[in-house]
Amino acid sequence: MSLKDEIEECGEILGKDTVDSFLVCMQCGKCTGSCPSGRITSYRTRRIINRLQAGDRSVLSDPDLWMCTTCYTCYERCPREVRITDIIRAVRNIAAREGYMSEPHRATASFVIKTGHGVPINDETKKLRKELGLPEVPPTTHKYPEALESIRKIVKKTNFDKMVGFDWDTMSLEKREKK
Amino acid sequence: MKSLVIGGGPAGLQASLDLANAGYDVYLVEQCFSLGGRAVQIVKNYPSLTFIKDFMKPLMDDVYNHEKITVLTNSEVIGVDGEAGNFKVKVEKRPTYVNLEECKDESCAKAMDVCPVEVPNEFNVGLDKRKAIFAPFSYSVPSGCVIDEKSCLHFKDGSCSKCSEVCGGINFDEKKETVEIDDIGSIIVATGFDPFDPNLRPELAYDKYKNVITSLEFERMLDENGPTKGKIIVDGKEPKSIVFAHCIGSRDKKVDNPYCSRICCMYTAKEAYMAKEKIPDATIAVSYIDMRAFGKGYEQFYEEVQKKQVLYRRGVAAEIYGNGDKVVLRAEDTLLSEPYEFSADLIVLAVGVEPRSDSAKLANVLGLQLDDCGFFVEKNVYDTCETEKDGVFIAGCCQGPKDIPDSLMQGSAAAAKAIGLMQRCNT
Ligand SMILES: Cc1cc2nc3c(=O)[nH]c(=O)nc-3n(C[C@H](O)[C@H](O)[C@H](O)COP(=O)(O)OP(=O)(O)OC[C@H]3O[C@@H](n4cnc5c(N)ncnc54)[C@H](O)[C@@H]3O)c2cc1C
Ligand code: SF4
Ligand code: SF4
Ligand code: SF4
Ligand code: SF4
Image (tube, rainbow over all chains, first blue to last red; front, top):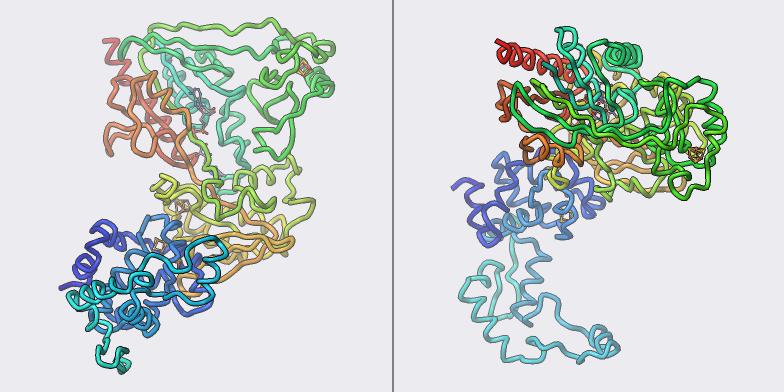
């Protein structure tokens, strides 16, 4: 399967026109120049799109793929309306399937499995909620712990646990060798 | 049989002259007070670096003084009936309240002097002010003053008539007339373009900083007869570092302009060259996507500009922000894959060519189609002068972006087509 076909498959939920828009990138650099992540990391938005155009599969194992903060600035500004951020999400889906999910993203995934939240609540947030006149705990798995079972069912059914390498016995992530 | 030309820029002027020289009576309808179009706001041409005035002024005079051409300035076509070979046209001629026959140069100066109203000068893109009675620009044709009734106090509340005290040519009672012309065999539309409004790209901060300007403002600064007397001055100072930013409002689907404007690569090269001539110790850079120098002698001119140590750096302007007195252009150098920042005293935005905002109105009057971008639709790629409407031709930037030589050429081509059609109608 070509990389383009895979992107279409893994970006199905975003729509073919959206994820295929990487084909019309004109390499202007507006995205990289606008990217807050690229200011402090080696991540170059345009280079990712460029490598996708070239069908370069090494993108999948490149840690840079995970440097995007999904702020959508580039998406808003791209003069060719390349749906950059959505494309990066679709390509991350392929990378994750192939076992290249970044460690911080795996950690976030493990929180979802463990607590039902990518970012579980902490005392500080509880305090803030109270100050704002909200119930201390939101109506999620935090309030209804029984819903966690449903989430875990989905996780197993979709093989999300295998994809992120979650060990149900130790309730933690398996160690992964850097590929 | 007569012929109608709408728009008195390079394309319309050339078409009028060719038609008249072939023996046809021509009516040239121009919306503004003077002939010339956008071209007269530009100082020098590329790649020759000759003064545009030296070409445009004689062309405007030849057209204005041609015995077979009737020039109707400050006028608009409001109705068209009939068909190829026999159109009937209605033109609304608005008053200028100044009788040019009575006009003497000194009285113009006096009238402008006494006029108490100052408004931004459109010709200089707001870089200076003009009076309510004013001469459109240094070599306008027809020459002399006009009164702009939208800003004149006499028409606002009757509180002023100062200019009429120093100039005998003023006539506040002039009324607008409708001129009806029949036996029009062909119509040539040459209504030109609008420059892109960079406020539609807010990350470029055009409205935020005085030292972020458009290329058209920059052109006006290059003019010895312009608002800065030919000096490049921003906020009272001569800039020592200038960045030109390509493709502003062109090749940009976000602002509905997916096309390349064709002229801005080259006019920027010219502006950078002229800037370097005026301020030899200035650091000058150009942020560009790729260079489009496809005309005769254009690539060689691009080389000349590089020899002047104008630095071409690949990558479109991503954003602009202010830092003290400086403005900073942020972009990615796409060859190095490195984001960079250029801190400059002046940033010039190479704004693109847009269809005129009022072209839908004219399209409606003439029964013409506009394309997705808003330009008039040509018959097909092999015939860019004819339209789907028999007897109506298009030329210049109203058909699509192009520079002055190409506009002139299409004006001539449209005239040739119109002459052919009228010959056929006669036999
Ligand atoms: C910053 C800048 C720099 C440029 N530099 C260069 C350069 O160095 N060299 C070069 O070759 N080109 C240059 N150009 C391009 C040049 O201005 C155009 O190629 C040229 O003006 C196009 O001629 P035109 O006759 O098609 O249209 P215009 O010049 O736009 O003239 C159209 C005329 O039609 C009139 N009109 C419009 N609508 C109506 C209506 N409904 N009824 C009656 N009249 C109407 C307008 O008032 C105007 O007078 C530059 C442009 C810009 C913006
Ligand atoms: S802004 Fe859009 S067109 Fe420009 S390089 Fe990035 S993805 Fe490509
Ligand atoms: S969405 Fe990602 S790639 Fe785009 S600007 Fe934000 S961080 Fe950079
Ligand atoms: S009448 Fe109008 S144009 Fe004349 S001086 Fe007064 S304001 Fe100016
Ligand atoms: S002519 Fe050059 S600057 Fe203008 S839109 Fe085309 S590529 Fe961009």
